[in-house]
Length: 259
Image 1 (cartoon, rainbow, N blue to C red):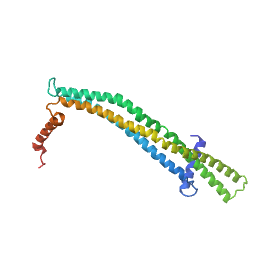
Image 2 (image 1 turned 90 degrees about the vertical axis):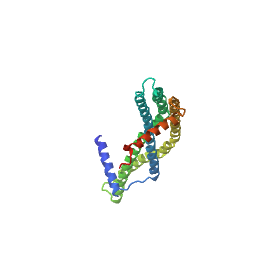
Image 3 (image 1 turned 180 degrees about the horizontal axis):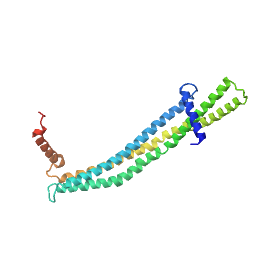
Image 4 (image 1 turned 120 degrees about the vertical axis):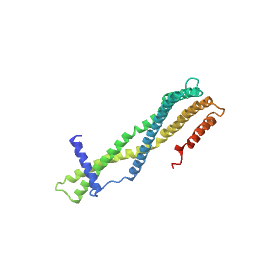
């Protein structure tokens, strides 16, 4: 930071402190405050949505990888020709296909239709934040110069040209501030309205991406149930076997009441 920039920063910080104590009047713009509130709300929501949407994709990848590890482990339980050996092989194949689809189709479509549009929306926030900061700096400059001019009116200086110079500087600062303020008050509502063409299609794409992936996963896993013994398939055969094991565990003293 240059010396000039440093002195400006100090001057603005001093002005802000003096405003908090009431020593210098503070300009209040209710219209801008409302637009900034709407902007901050939008910024927080879009950034959170982008983070959570990315988290979903990461979670799916973690899930399919975990399924592959489970399939590898389960497969090691059965030798060739074992009653459930074929089911283990089918499960391994199914989860490998699910992982492949997650890495290719789901990942590509999800990024293109959900993450990338949200990312482009988020990319405009830094420019708006910078403009809001600049507006605040110029407002502090204006309030400081206006206060100095007012003090010269209340207590005239021996230098007759000091008041006109102070008023000229205050008016110039006001024009800069008001120009930035008008731009933001005009542009922020436009940005807020962009949530419709950006968020709505991304939300729809998010749901459809999940639907396609989960439907494909369901059919892959559902097809395996015929490989299990018994006419009831997974719904009856496995449930019955699990219940038998649970009942055996209940009969053991280790699962007793704890007396």
